Image (cartoon, rainbow, N blue to C red; front, side):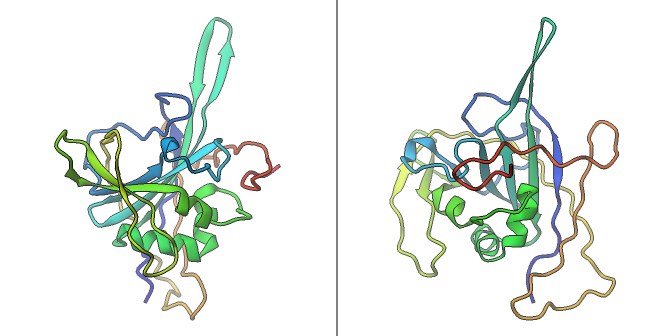
Length: 223
């Protein structure tokens, strides 16, 4: 039986701390036990062409994937505004490594996270991520991040690198009931059903998927 119970899709506006750096919602809550994110200092190219970022956090046994395009700057009269959006996909009761493998092997889940069909899938992004445990730290208190592992089973261990500790505070997303009507064990090779929810934090109505940047040579962004 596939361990995926539900997928939560959220979209909303939030402040972006620095252009070119991944920012996560700063709400009081549970600190992730393990995290993965793209680290520009790793020297690896960003498969999303620097127009967006994907991060992963394991929170209380669930794995939360966050997709965040770069913010849009608006100039209205004398007021300057920055609009940023994000989408989240939560795999309930799925550990981080298993969640990464699930998205790498099932393109439908990664497309749901992005809000559009990806031509390359999650594999290139997965390989570019740097991961660390928030429970482990060096003598300065900074967490030890290890380089992202290969999607190939039994891949060799990667060297560890000490990086700055973002330690974003997280609120664990509310769990939604898994699909029950007509649900059963999916056939081999068939992705399990996805339960989607989208919410507008201001009006409570259904939210539109965030606009994605124009297409470029990476093939990750629709025209």
